[in-house]
Image (cartoon, rainbow, N blue to C red; front, side):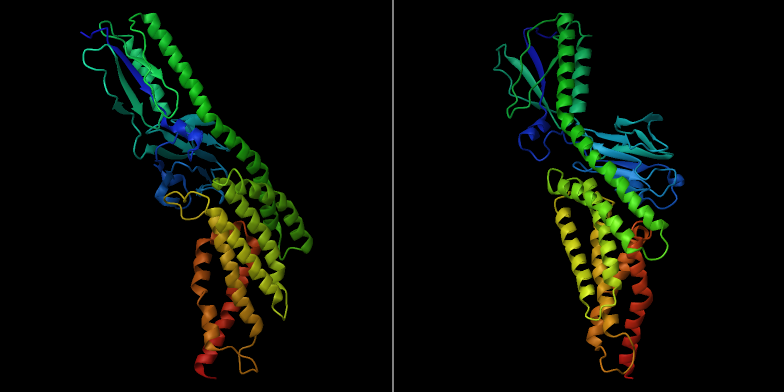
Length: 454
């Protein structure tokens, strides 16, 4: 039989709350690493990235859909372009339906937003995934020194760990179980505040069921309020980002769709119209990634897409201008270099891409800026040596080899980004094809001519 003169108190310390005082993840309790594993890829029209695994890393979020802007694109016409978002919350991962056509279901229940637990089935449209926590973040009991033997001091246990959701469930469960104990001292759970030191909280020695019920209610209320306090910054952040991304994504889509409907080379007027449309998007997203949202990959990707759409409209007239001095091509190369430098600067403020994802719109735009510089090298050679044969000016083998050295890079970028070039960056894709069909062949003919000695 338990001695009722002993006071047994359990306190929960939320270490994540320290982040409100200057930590790297202010306002959020870090969730465990997790993943979503596709259990039936038969509904997908092309191979899934990462072998069908969506890696969930604290500090990042994933967007799922058939659009290239998604961090995890899925080739299925049954998904919307931006179908769903998987985000981190108070010690857990959540899923949000981004107003998709075919919806999101968790365990066969259609949801707008839902928190995920181990083993949940998540369906994006008809495509099922299983939610798995890589290393479940269980509560770790850390006993504090007991009171001196023979004293009536409190016996305290603190639960450490970052999972506020698990802590709340464990506390409430413990309180409910204590109501069933008739012969033992009730186990009372009291939440602690999140200062640097965690102090044990003693409770009166009472067996009265009313006291237990009141304590349970107080505990639940404190945990709910605490959860709101911790979750509020995350919710507000998501809303502010959405206020930027929603209208800006619509503008980008409009510009891309207009380019798809255009046959032939766009007019100067249409190019300038597109650039004017995109300037506010660049301003909004650029200010955001330079300011308080420097860690937002979603905004960085949107900025990169809008910048490259403007770049390809500025690059086109410079690249095709028949300028004998070569100044227009030099300007095209300079713009490509500036774009690459700017996007590299932004990428340095972001967390690494999740495991299994080797590219996103930001990386694609940066690499395609490199590809633009390769195109300039080929075109510069063609302008300088347009006719193969014995002429007053002809290239040397070292000059040819210097340009040919970048051929492998051109092929690599073409292979990696062939899809996005054909869908989003059609104006730039036309210049890539022109170099492949003409400039590369000219270089090869000059090489053969010089090697043969004719």
